[in-house]
Image 1: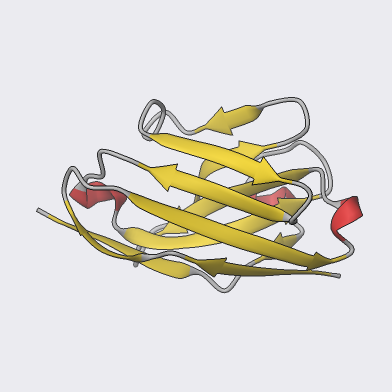
Image 2 (image 1 turned 90 degrees about the vertical axis):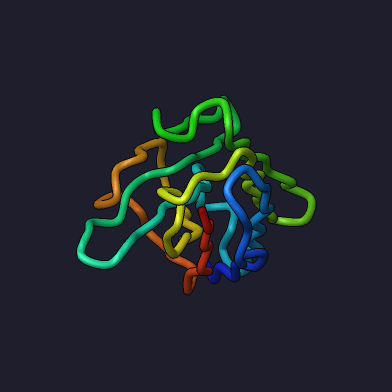
Length: 120
């Protein structure tokens, strides 16, 4: 089992920045890809960004504005979000996958989620 705990959400004005963090514990060696998904009411959870030992991956909607990073010594993954837009408002979930897939069906573990609200 892997436990994921997010922090760093909050309220920010459009154009501002936030940094999300996720600390992993447990059988972290089994997780190849760490990432972030987001979800708004009435919509499916969607991929935002992911990072493995070989590279990082982004959804088109956040490419160039968000940066994902990973500190393996601290079992932590961060999501730096810049130039935030109101449409980035969502609950953001940390994810851990045993493999390299960015599809939601392949995610093995989820955090509890943290709210990000971007005001216009």
